Image 1 (spheres, helix red, strand yellow):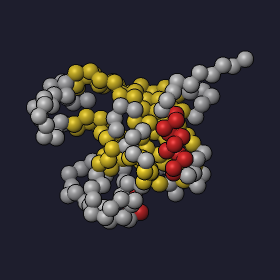
Image 2: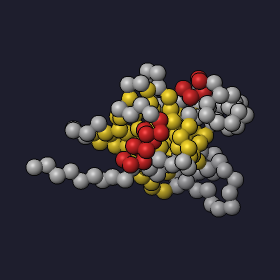
Image 3: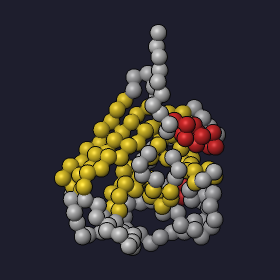
Image 4: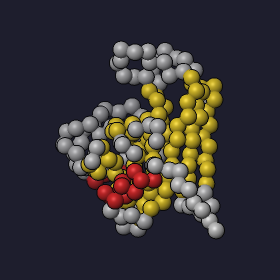
Length: 178
């Protein structure tokens, strides 16, 4: 990947558990340019909605928020949940609470106008960026590891799906098989 000396995504599949762990290893070089690193998290489930949790509130980005507010990026406590009448998926964003929603192209910022299609935009884990004005060094160089987990879920209730995601982030679970 341009701007790095080492980039890899490692996938770990489980034989008896509906789970995939993926780990991004990144060795970033130093740069004075504005940089952002995104990892796509979009999934296609029929009739699904995407949910996040901030604090105690579960919401659909782009819909369940104040009209006229930002819908480009969000913080999420544990990750994201896709729910549909047939179930869905939970994705833990363990080290990267910032997510970006929208197309990966330069565009005017669109503010929330609670339409259903706002919740169907592509979503990305915003792994790194150096575009904020800060009072500390914004050097992204060095080696980092970013952990994610995906579970299939039969949960159709958004609140319960986000509760399930939170519970799953407390692994490891020890299984004793006799």
